[in-house]
Length: 125
Image 1: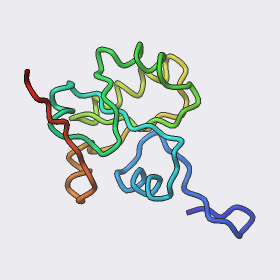
Image 2: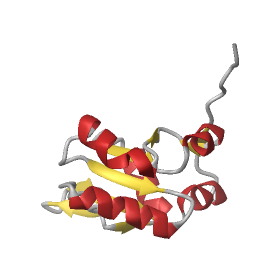
Image 3: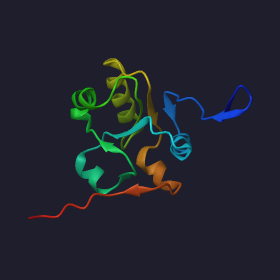
């Protein structure tokens, strides 16, 4: 934790690669200025994802991000593998997003420490 003028605590600045603890600290801090992006297939997202994450599958990532997220938004990206998260982060950086962090370990690491997840139950007609 950093201290502004030695008095007011501020969260640690965003890094290009983050641990789940870093993201959880920012969420607990109450910062609304970030977006958590799950780039896995939508069916996997529906089964389980980090609470508050949005689904932007890798194949749709850039187009959908440009339509819905400002370029100055803090974005945490995760997937099944760190390599896929890094690919997604690089795609976003290449189109102008500067505040992008790869969430190391993804959903597995998030669940392993007991942080909150949610699922979407789809009801058939």
